[in-house]
Image 1: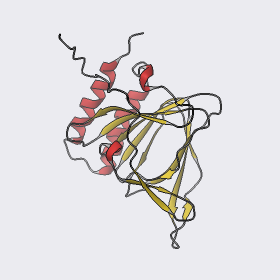
Image 2: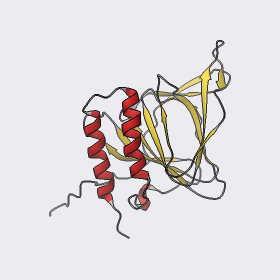
Image 3: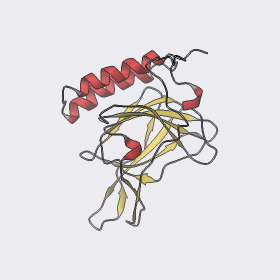
Image 4: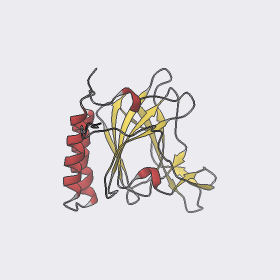
Length: 197
């Protein structure tokens, strides 16, 4: 099967152009969210090597990192019943659901420093868009909504997220630092450049 890499390439170009205008965060979420919604509206562009689940843990595949690390594009692949711990991002992020479904639970710190659930869990279906931000809510836990199938979401972050120092939180208030990294064995060639030998 031929995969429509130009769809991702056009998204990357348009997203970079939008960021070049130095939008406010609300504009970024509105305009960037619309671009991401258009990307995940059609499921013909993500090859299987960036949609491969792991039997024990979710996978984070780098699809693109801006040369100035202004943003990165990542596919999150959830095996059945897989979930993240409660964690933060330290940068803005957009989430677009491509396949399956996922649930997200937002958390916030109470006056005593312990975490508390912040509203009811939210379910994302294909085409749905969500966001995170240190300004509006950055701590959450995400899980595959299904026990019998893979789910995939596409995440855009305001940095090279695989290098950002972040934190995992426990409900008792304990915090552990982490850097997520990527599951890639190689990076995609979205620009269509052929190697000449």
